[in-house]
Image (tube, rainbow, N blue to C red; front, side, top):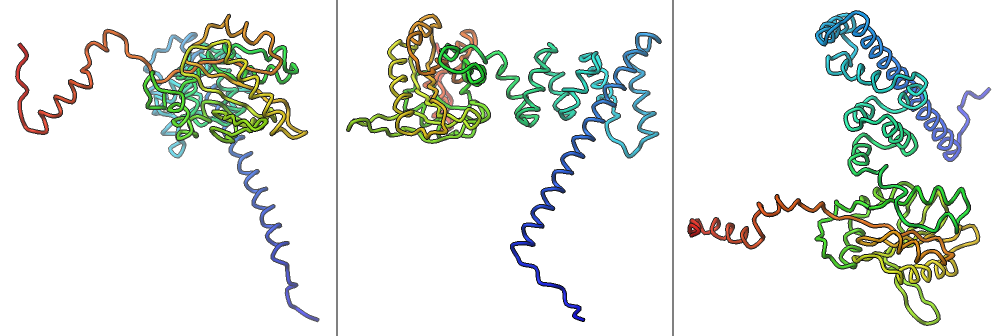
Length: 352
């Protein structure tokens, strides 16, 4: 009787190993999420107990320091019982009195994310909105803080669109949700007077930051995307594909205020993309006109009779300095003079 181990094909073994790895990773992720859930619930319960004792027993703030020492002594190998962390537990319980909200939302995101929400937001509805976005899109703590600081919630739903009329209800809601106003291009080192091509090149060279600002689901297709219509060439500033909406998104950049004729040009681009690029499984294309500023009434009038789904939004570059600070800072010419004297080791003559 042969004792040889039967030969296993390389492909079969690799497929088997790959499946096992995926199962192990999935189990690890589930275990980590379960641990995080239990930890946040425990922290909330501890914070609630501290709050109740303060109210019923009249305990002061010093009890947290004492409690921290006693808990560390009892659980020397367990982190998280510092006075600072206990104060965050108290703040967590104070921020969310409803245990159902904690179980359904707050316990689904990491402790560090919850600390950021407590630090940066005072309104519970806003905290819950950002917590739900974190759950949906898997934001890191840094990304969460960036989205809060850029007022993502306040910038959604402010764009002028005709989506309610030109898209099915389910797509209209989602499309309105993905538009922001204004878009924050503060990561670009451009002046307010930059030309459209300067803006386009800068966005393409910072495509990672641009995609992050656009939101989840956008895939970059190209810049100055060439279309040939009846022997004539046309170039789209920026072309994207939205994976969830399953449709192309055309972006036209303008460094001026919105003008009604911009809507007609975008309507042409959208129709051309629908005809020349879309496959049978693609949904109709969306157009976004990004301007330096807009009058919402003018934009709505311009879109009123257009049947292609188009939105008009704005963007901002670096924040302008307040006049009182601007007057205190040296001009570029003054800095150049100062640098010239410094390089030569000279002292600048005193002003009369």
